[in-house]
Amino acid sequence: MDIQVEAASASSDPLGRALHLLRMTGVIYSYSYLHPPLGIALPPLPGCFMFHAVTAGECWLRVPGAEPVLLRAGDFALVPRGEGHDLLSTATSRADDFFDLPRVQLGGRFEILRHGEGSAPVSMVCGAVRFDDVLARRLVHALPRQIVLGGQSLGPSNWLAPILALLQEEVQHLRPGGEAVATRLADVLVLQAIRTWLQNDPGARTGWLGALQDAQLGPALVLMHEQPGTPWTLASLASAVAMSRSAFAARFAASVGMPVMQYLTLWRMALAQSRLQEGQVRLAELADSLGYQSEAAFSRAYKRWSGRSPGSERRVEPAAALA
Image (tube, rainbow, N blue to C red; front, side, top):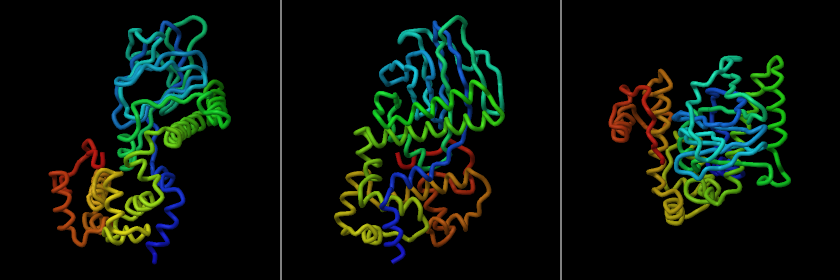
């Protein structure tokens, strides 16, 4: 009965529930005045979502493996995989390292950056945020190399323009508390860009993301994400979303690309790795929270998955467990 109630509440917006679990941490933010001729190379920042919100002028965004895109005032670009990329006056301009450019530090994470001199600079808010979350690592693999949004593409419900205007107001006048407001507005832009892509791009209707938006698979995924310690079986998950075992198993494997119970195991292991790397955690408590009846059973499962014992886990590059 309890599972049925949870499934019903999860079914209203499984994708929204998944996004709600994302924990975002700002790494760096800057307001940049970039005068043509422009050529700036941003180095890779693994594990970060990098973004550019253009408030005046225009420039080219060049991301490896993607078509160069001309960004104009009012556009917002997101590079979800933290790949190195360039901002250019022309699509073939030479680029200098972003971190070699002169800047003024305004706070712990916010700075003003200037490049070149003259009139008509390109001005933009740039930044990088990190999602220290298992779901975020899964989401990164489902997103394209770049997401570019503009006022015209958003139509009448243009949420981008007012947020950009408020962000520009904050960074140009730097009133007390301006850094806190600007960084939070930038974070909102990142989440809104992800949501807009999920809502509008056909690529978001397939695979794991498509399953999250499926009326029955979505609630099942939410149950596994939010209740990893429940002793789920194929039968109990199928029952929770009112499907037969065979139909649920076939549809899940076809959409997600792996069997239900394999996904659940990989999800538990990814959570375990994340919690072990975050700091001190008692293995017995971790095992119990993930549905294992003993510390020994959990340790065996973890070593099969990672090749290391839980006790030897350190701050290493997270495995793409569900990629």
